[in-house]
Length: 244
Image 1: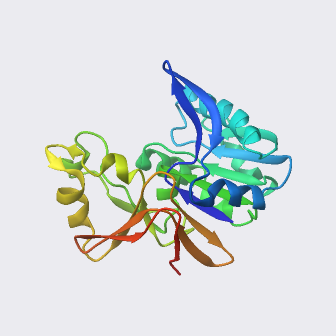
Image 2: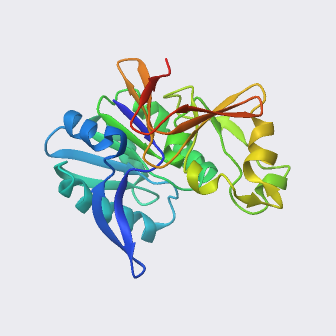
């Protein structure tokens, strides 16, 4: 079972401090996770930035509390980063694998360095992609420019191989970034739309996700297709469609 999300919840900020909270129940996500969850699950999180130890430990700590209070019991939760990258060799022994959010190219490089795609071959549990983790799950990844200078850097690669879990290229957090300006250009109209000619991207708002089960791919929640320079809403909140 694969869930490729924009955001799964699990925390909120209060006075600058991140507090554990329930996972998102929007569009049936938490209900579906509970239905498919194995009790006392062994969970492995693969980080987006292997060198950001403080952030990685914070993510692991938050989820260690958020999952049980969401009705998802865990036996252990571990995060894979630069300190223990060889743990990917034990992926088949885990029940749940979480691909964390972050900077897409940075995470992609880490995935390739630890040969994550190779070790996923024998994994039969639940895989949850979050933001960048969902983007890097595609066969071909579209790394939408994000940081200042990326859209005008001739050396910045916008397309590269991913994990091959799906053919669908995801753009998360659409509700937050749809009006963004990057390097003096409109992120979508001036950058992403032109990149969509001959391709299609799927823009998800937080709370929406793609689910892959038994070879069937479904999209849940508000989402938009960007294809050949045009934007079209293809699904609404609390609804779902079959993509393939």
